Length: 306
Image 1 (cartoon, helix red, strand yellow):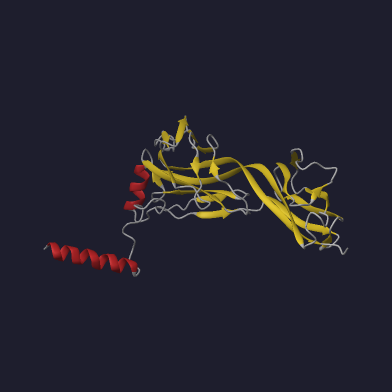
Image 2 (image 1 turned 60 degrees about the vertical axis):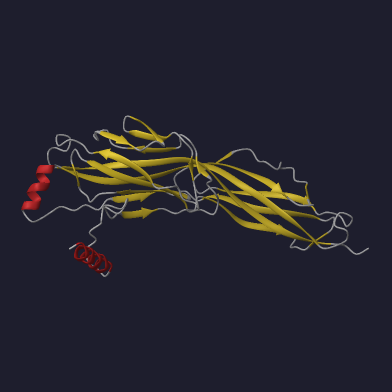
């Protein structure tokens, strides 16, 4: 009998891979519901149009300039930005502009031209051999990543009525992920709509989809805000919850540009709160972060003849 049961289970398992209904749907975190996802662009602050004058190679001891543009591609938000020259090899910075530029607020769609002047090393510094000057700089800015997802809550009585009528309800949440390289992905671990006064798992993953680097999620930077009609919310030992807002109280690592999957447990509103029928709510996640991107131009230096 045990062999028969085991054999039947294996047949069902293999058949499921061939297109049968997924009997495990909702058990694996994040697979309980589909999501209609709208994701805005990852580009925010960009470095563009790096230019060297005169065109390399540059002769030993000569002067040259490196220029580039920094652009805020957001059409709504100001972005606080700084930039810094951190490597120039044997070349010398002779620009009147200092290596580190004061913090600047970039207005929506604003572009700023940055230009530095350099002296190439002399023959004696490069031993009269061809050389290179790596002109490397970084741009840092702060921004707030935001995502919002909706969720439908239905009363148990209403759900029972619809099921008995042969018209069981379904709900696919809409997830909007804001602009910027850091994205917050949200999903639910149960089929929706969710019943009132029930436990609803929610999963959060932070991803870095930009060309720069977000090393960690700093303490007190990631917040999950749930509507006040929800009876309770908890997000594990990485978060402290006050009312219906949970904020991380520890640093969360980013491994291969992604956070571990974070889990919150929500207790859905009472039937009275949803007027004994159903109601749609919105949950918001936000992350204040600093981001760094880099640019470079490697300048060929040519010795002069003696």
